[in-house]
Image (cartoon, rainbow, N blue to C red; front, side, top):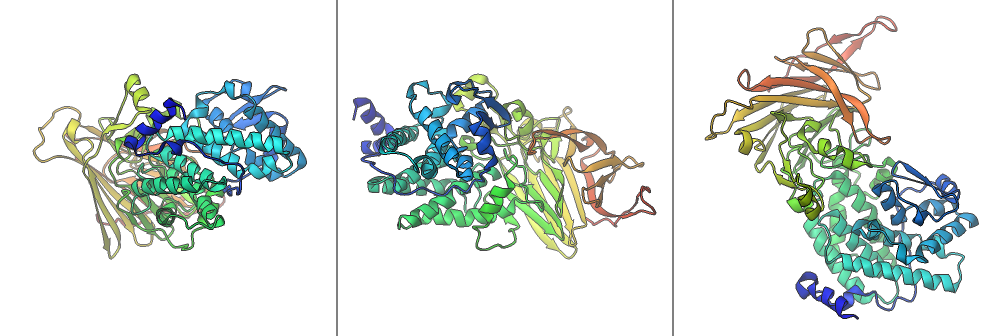
Length: 571
């Protein structure tokens, strides 16, 4: 080993990592290939064979040139190409032509190690590539000769060595777990890796215990992290069993905790609540993950460690963020959405947060993370969290973490005779404006009514301020909800895709319909609407509102609906 490599090894983890950890050892053969749970599409194999590579909403056509020599249209596209996850589509086609095409593309990449790009060495991309090359090895090596087999193994060994280097300086959160999962795969799938199996297993166990909270949520508070991690952790558990090695208890315990959390965040249509960087989740992948859940139970109502609450009544579901922002080291994607909620009825989502697009995030990041992009209260058009804004600091910190936000978030849940009561508050506006936001939700037992009150109160001991007294409550609507104002100015009629009708009403205030954006759609950002109620603290300290399922009475096709209002529930 070179002096450089020995120095790096000595610095890792305060000198506790053996230098030999950075080297794969004598890996002379692959002995197992892990299963890939991500959905494959055989029709995409024909596109790849024709030289059309479609990733992250962008298309690049080779025209006879190497795809690895062409300029990437976006960083997301480049990450998808260099992660090699697209090999699963070629494997799904399972023809001699697609196998030869896969072998040719991998050989092209292996034969030119000098044309490496910065994205290629990114920890998450490198981890995905190692897992892809291991899991798709039967496709690439099925009909090959010994020469290419050895070349493939040398290239894979080199990638694993780079991956171990990344452990010395890697971002906290999901990327760190992805690297450790990939290293566990590498140790299990290659021969003569007993020492590395022990080391990788121990490091992964420690990280899982730190990052997966007791209720199963991820430390970043992003529901998408659960989907991403379980997609690799479930096959990893199978790979341990296939090697006749007991999976580490920390891995089994983490999976057991994460599965109920996966159900917790789902609405009736199978989509996930949009909190803290969540984008659209592939429904087929989620269904595959849930098939591994042995309990098949109803979602739990409270996740106190992760800071979320769920109200289920009849066919109605409310999911609410009742926690402080995550630690700064894992808050690069965290949103200022404290006390925001989402509402769904059956298979129809009604109230949402704007979410985050799956691609092109940089264009929307500032808006998507703001409090105004969430269904909650904003004070003086400010966000309840503040983020790093200086470009130099963003580069240094590899993102824009949360630097301040709610420190004290209170949540009290009570079951009453006529429904469920949730009383919450947060102090995200206390330091700047001297006020506390309090939100009370009451859902009727039959799920046909949701009453709420948002109030702004000057904190005890806070200095009185004569400026910055305006506040607003926003309810972003799903694009499939058709909204129209009622004649009284305080009500909004909401028609769902299944023709159910809900009515929103502000008790004492005027409700406006304004433009909004639904960012987490499968087909990219879409225009939608939001209900906005504005108030001034000098005139009133609270806003009371309700969502009520209405009975539509139609005398004839095309006739105007008559909305029957239900009696109010006392808060």
